[in-house]
Length: 70
Image (cartoon, rainbow, N blue to C red; front, top):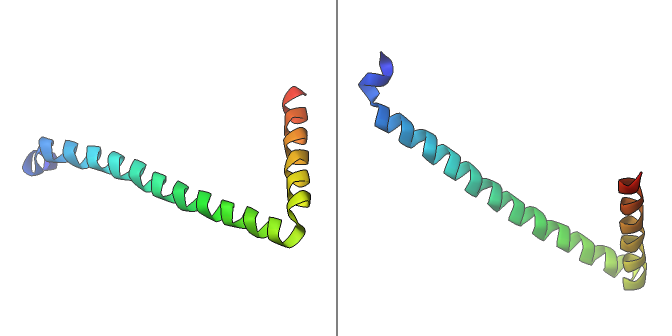
């Protein structure tokens, strides 16, 4: 069989490293996504005004809690 030539230990290492690097890659993507979201919120607050941005986020929070109750 082909996996006996390569070695079972080698295949297990590859699987474990694949899982670890997938998780680390997801963390990096989440970090940059969060940074982009914060910059977008700051830009929205700058364009629309701080009070308008706060009111919009509060409205989103209220609508989200209403959806969960239904």
